[in-house]
Amino acid sequence: MSDIVISVRDLTKRFGDFTAVDRISFDVHRGEIFGFLGANGAGKTTAMRMLCGLSYPTSGSGSVAGYDVRTEGEKIKRHIGYMSQRFSLYNDLTVGENMRLFAGIYGLGAKQTEERTVELLDRLNFSSERNTLVGSLPLGWKQKLSFAIATIHRPEVVFLDEPTGGVDPVTRRQFWELIYEAAEAGTTIFVTTHYMDEAEYCSRVSIMVDGEVRALDTPARLKQQFSAESMDEVFSTLARGAQRGE
Amino acid sequence: MRGNFLSFVKKESLHILRDKRTMLVVMLIPVVLMILFGFAISTEVNNINVAVVVSERTDGISDAVERLAQNDYFTFKGYISEDDIDPWLRSGKVGAVVVFASDFDRRKEQAAQGIDTKPIIQLIVDASNVNTAGSATAYLQSVLLGSASQQAMFETRMLFNPQMKSAYNFVPGIMGLIFILVCAMMTSVSIVREKEVGTMEVLLVSPVRPVKIIFAKMIPYFAISCIVLVTILLLARYLLGVPMTGGVWGIFSLSLLYLMLSLALGLLVSTIATTQMAALLISAMVMMMPILMLSGMLFPIENLPKFFRVVSNIVPARWYIDAVRKMMIQGLPIVAVWRNCVILLAMTVAILGVSLKKFNDKLE
Image (tube, rainbow over all chains, first blue to last red):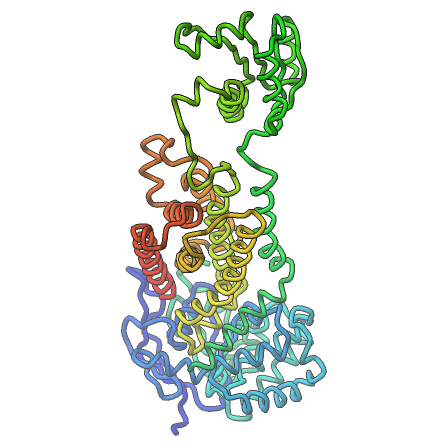
């Protein structure tokens, strides 16, 4: 298996005259936490949808977990995990039922499902909540649970679309600990975020402006390159030149 | 990947079972409607208050009034004077007044022999409710003249529903309505809910084929509808005494087809609506109204203006209700309503095709 998990070359998506994603290229390595930043409307979501096999690229090429985004979308879906910005578990099902549902969706057998459920609950210290309805959990817990469920089938890559929206700083920190744990275990993390302090936690960060990747490097080197104090400054400098509005 | 389909069906069933209130409503609505339409609401004429005006009480008149008083449909309120007619009708004390001609007995004889052709009884009826007035008049005529003259000319026989029970007529209508309510409304709301909440997004990123998600959703609602169907049929047969001589299996099979059609409609609505509220409104306004107005449930299609008669052809419930009515009341076998079956089948296929296509297009 190669060390490069996501590889993108000149990936482009046009909607009519509008070029949402304009010839982006980058590689993401195994076990990396790859921050995918950009203002609203910069083309993040469209790019991510192409990588998840939900949207067909207009031109360019890309592969995720070794599968071609143009031709093997269905296979990609089986090897990635996804957590959306909106909380997306079922509130009227219990913690255990949600886990069983997604395990079933990803084709895990009964024995494997039980093993993974116990393992994940144990890691989250959630074992006592297995039969609790998800709807009655606090938001921070729900989000951690969402992440755990996104990794239930041990995907090679997990896509996190603004996973920490609306969560307090303490829970966010706890959430990032989970992300680190997963990355150390060899799972590649592809994360979009609005919080610039979170960008600092990433191994490498790309910043999209007007459909193009304008900067890509480790947070430290980006700050050096733009002679900025924080990622916030780096981002503001780049985003200021944006042509597209919100 | 059969495993993931089953886990979906299970999940959908859990959603429904957990939502006890909705479940209860779905199960109770048919029962309530059946009882309501079967007993309370009826177009039959019952308990009409009738007063009589005479100049002298002859034997013939007493006979006629006696028959009137004995009849279940009428309540005899007594003899009144001519001056009372207007105030009694106005105040609603009576719904009809019968005025006998002065030499009733003699003229009735002559009328029977065909000598005298002038009216001998005047009926003054409160026609503020047209239906009631119409039926009351018809009943009164037959009751009052009961004997000889009229019956000699016509022999009327009411086929299929000899007691003219309106419940018979309503059962097929209720069925046409209920299944749209349960299947179309509930599936569309449940699909749209996932879009609204955001869970649909996660499902679409998963390896499950979208079509599977949809079909998994339909199965539990289909099951519930089947329970509702059996409930309705049992109530119709044993509580309302609808004959169903045409065989219950024909009605059952046709209803299954109609269920599928309703599910397809629900899917179609879900591809149009973006919020649960919109899905509810579309189901209620766009689907319920035509069923109530244009399906023959309440108003006979033959009585509709030309334009609406044409429009009614595209209302699926119209064909379903018509067929069920024929099978349930006239006792025809399912083969006799093959035309309705074919039309419903074609509609199901068309709606399902369009909505699946729309659903897939939306994903892109």
